[in-house]
Amino acid sequence: MAKAIMLQGTGSDVGKTVLVAGLCRLARNRGINVRPFKPQNMSNNAAVADMPGETGGGEIGRAQWLQAMACGVAPSIHMNPVLLKPQSDIGSQIVVQGQVFGQAKARDYQNLKPKLMDAVLDSWRKVGEGADLVVVEGAGSPAEINLRARDIANMGFATRVDCPVILVGDIDRGGVIASIAGTNLILPEEDRRMIVGYLINKFRGDPNLFDSGITAIEEFTGWRCFGIVPWLKEAALLPSEDSVVLERLASGEERALKVAVPMLDRIANFDDLDPLRAEPRIEVVFVSPGRRLPADARLVVIPGSKSTIGDLQRFRENGWDGDLFEHRRRGGYVVGLCGGYQMLGRVVRDPHGIEGTVREAPGLGLLDIETVMEPEKTVRNVAARSVRFDTPLEGYEIHLGRTTGPDCLRPVTVIGNADDGATSPDGKVFGTYLHGLFAADAFRAKFLESLGVSGGGIDYRAEVEKALDAIADHLETHLDCDAILAAAR
Image (cartoon, rainbow, N blue to C red; front, side, top):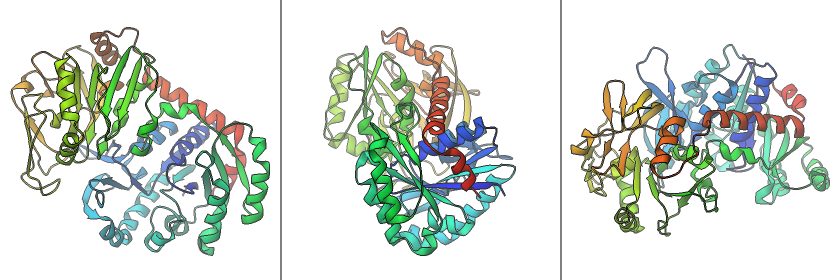
C-alpha cells in the first residue's frame, strides 16, 4: 500500500479541500505518484468519473475531481466511495462507488455506515494501488463525538487503516486555539494518538503575531505545528464543494455584464458558474432567498438542483418567478442548467415519486417543454458541440428525467448524434442538460459577445492549473512540507 496522510478539520469549511488539492499538486511537482481520497463526502456538487468496463460513468464529489486534476491523474469512483447528495433537510441520496445506492434520512443513514465501511475499505485499497502517497480528506470534524461510534469519514476511518492525521484550524472564523485544544480535550485516546500535529489555515497579516498562540496550543495539546497558511486568494478560482460559500462569491464590483443566479435550496453543481466568475468583465451575483433578482442583470442563470419540484416551489415562494418574468419583459436572457432547464418548462412530472410526494408541478413556462422524471439516472462524461456557435464542448451529464416539447426542435448542443436542450423562438431563453457548458472557452467568448461583452475568452482550464501551482508554492513556503511527507505512513 501507498503511504498516507489525512487532513481533518476542527469544523466544516476550514479549507481542507483546497489544502488537500495543494498538497497533491505539491507532491506531484516533487515527482511523487500521489492520489486523493475522501471516504465520505456530502455535496450536491458532483462530477463524473469514468468506470472501466462500463458504458457510463459514476458520481464522485467535485472536490475529488479537482484533487485528481491536481495529481495529474484521471478521476476514479474510488477516490470518493460514499457521496451523500442532500435532497431535504433530513435526508439524502446515497451514492456508493459511483452508483446510486438508495436514499436515507440522517438517522437511518447511521445504521448503514457499517455496511458502507466495506465499500470505503475496498476503494481505499484500489486507490493506493501503484501510488506512492495518498492524501486523505476528512469530513466535518472528528470532534463530533456523538457520531464517532459508526464513523467512516474521520477517526473511524483513520484508526481502521492506521492513517496519521493532521488537524486543520481556521483562524479566519476565530477561536482557533480553543477549537484545536478543545478537539484534543474531547477525543478519546485511541483517536488522539492518530494526530501527528496541526496547521493553521486562512491567516491574514503577520504570522509572527501568532507565535504565542502556537506556544499555547503546544502547552494544551503537545502537538507540533506544521505551519501557518496565509489567505489563499487563488482558492477563489477553484470549484467550491459546499453551498455555504455561495454568499461570499459575489464580486461586489460593477462590471460590463451582471449575471444573477438564484440560490436554490438544493442547488447542485454551481461550479458551472465558475468560468463566468473568472471573466474579468463579468459580475456574478448569487441571490440568497428573501432577496430580489437584481433588475440590472442582463442574464439570469438557473443552476442545477437535487430537487427540481421542491426548488420550483421555493422559487415561487421567494417571488423570483415574478422577477424572472419582469426580466424577460425587459429583454433579458435566461439560461437553465440541468434542473434549472427542467424548471423553465411548462410542467415537471414525477409519476414514480422519485423526488418526494408531489407528483406534478407547473414550471416557469419560459420554454415550451415538459419533463417527466424517470428512475434511470444518466451519468456520463460527454463530448458535444454548440448548435448556435458551432464550437466544441466537453462536459458531463448527471440527471433524472426526459424532456420533450416543441422548443427541443431548437437544441442547444448535439451530444454524439443526439440533440440536447431547448431554445425559445427569440433565442434569449435556453436550457441544457450539459454541465460544463461555460467551461468551453470558445463557446463562452461567443456567448458573451452575443450579450454585448467583448474581450472574453480566458483559458479557464489553464487558470485553474495556475491556481493549483500557486497554492502548492504557498504551501512549500509556509508549511514544513518535508515533515508532513515524513509523517505519512
